[in-house]
Image (cartoon, rainbow, N blue to C red; front, side, top):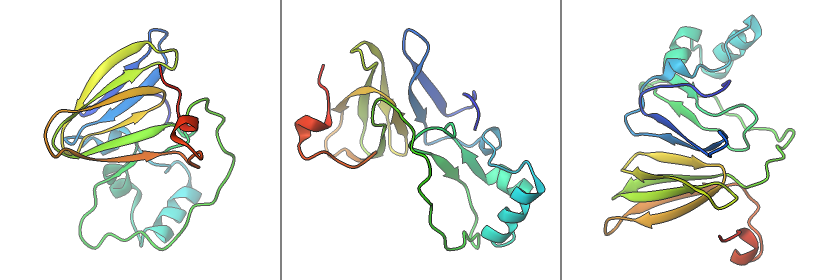
Length: 173
């Protein structure tokens, strides 16, 4: 994906200087074609047919969305597939690692509600984002998490490896 794309169910939180601090994907996101996968060459189309059990490029454009820039250390791909769709067995090789200055983190709200305060790494508060079940946020810099309902459940995903202590893991403001 190149750049930021406006689509229903997708929000970007920006710092005062314009850099992106967070990407929010709402549970109602459905515009897969706005974030197309790599299908620009005959080689890519041939790989698609082999790796996805005969999938055609037009179906792939309508059912797979590459949400994050290629250079991001965490990639988000949204899939909308019907029964019988198959991704053949594979693994992902380690290539060049990005040199980002913070470890990116994803929060997915499974149930309840939560509020994410989005901050620049300098400590400036940019916005509050409320998450409902099925919503997710990719945070590039600082954040605060507040749970708004009893029994709220979330999934937290972040870059590793995890340092030996919590204190070594983060910078508090």
